[in-house]
Image 1 (cartoon, helix red, strand yellow):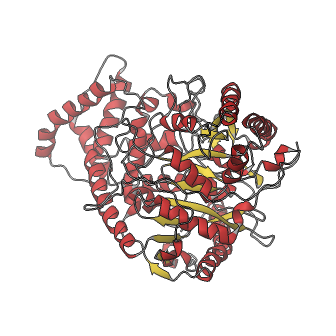
Image 2 (cartoon, rainbow, N blue to C red):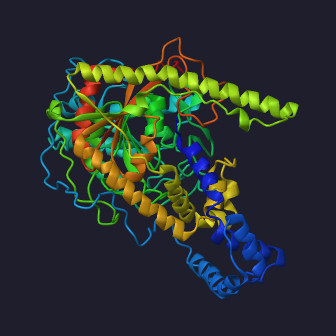
Image 3 (tube, rainbow, N blue to C red):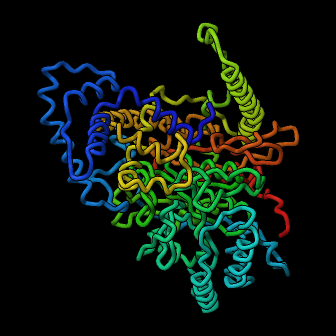
Length: 624
């Protein structure tokens, strides 16, 4: 089954509704009674409310049990209000820290000097600097180090491209021009004085606009937050400043990290501007793919680096949970949020990762593990597996005759037929894309890899995903309770305002039980990496949900361009399917690794990328 975060969260929320309503239903019924009673009054939870909530939840409560429960339920409801009066900011984490490591796991903390590739020689800098717009970080840093190009000129070139293509692609919220010019000037002066900081020195980059940057708005892409600002830079921004990189833009994200629709529009895919860029790291992937930054920073909770990297043909690194500090970044899910680079090539991601990883003493989930990049690592020594099920033909859905309604209205028949056609079209697209996945396996075998079939443990991963929406609802509690959620642009059943409301019906007991199941998933998935070092996976398969829950790292790389014979995309991009594709658009393949084995994983992904060369392809943007 093809999965995307937006649709999967909505489906999972609806799936859990019938069995988990009881506590939330009580609270909601009491809140409704209060609203009906008028201001200043606070009705108690009554036996009738308990009956209604129990009926919704599908549980049985006897009259005697009801009487015993009432005092405790009212006290519990009062406790909600006491906590709410604290007005907890989004930046304040809960008093627990998620650790993705199974018992007994060892982490390497010995840090070594990184070893980078020798840059491909660019003998002559072109007269038109825009010919370098799609150059890799490795290539640009070599030119910068040798003073063949200046940071000031490179910054001006990329800012000009941002301004030129933003009306088409809608990928920037704020261009940080004054800050960029000052930092580029400083970079040129330092490099001229022989104070070269490393491979990111002087290179222009973009930050997903959930990262705080002092002196500029940090909007989170959401209506009602357009003028929000913070007095301190995010840790990742500070570290890239220290590496000498030049921030030139705050890039778009879907509102509160959902999809590619933000408060001023929708970010577009440079390969096909009629489509969205997917999300939620929408602008980070789109600007990188369009050759408007040297690299960008995105974030992922459940697909937000993977999805836009696939749609836009970029290379994304979703690090192990706890490798990169999130201090100064918007919190969506404290146990699932991860920051990582979106670039044009794997080694670019490794170079950026080298600059941003490691504890910062504020994000308590970060671990002092080593990221030792070695471009010459012997990747042939690695054991490589592949998720066999994800590469097998997809079975078409056959509806059982016994489930067919006896009679349908004309309108119902029309909707049913439309749904059938949509499902058939989606199946055709996935079947077409499967040949690119299989070609990746063939290429790996041609590289000398003996691919070992593996399967993901059979666990109810979908039943664990309400953890994300429950934490997200807590992150934005006041948005719901004050009614400010109506300021968000998207208001469908699958968007945050409704998902936050649904999550209020999720009991604390079930949240804890789901986390216990998640611990089991971590242990079982981690066992796979005792058998193999790297796992090859279809990007759109179940692994996306599984490894975000377990905190394992992933590298998403371009895996070709769909041909002219590709099934045509739907006329409307609803944002529900990240693989709608169409002729001339990219596909991707994903590589997975063990916890904190990100450098080794990148080395293998780089070898595949060097063999395939797909990272060198870029969209042919119209002149503007």
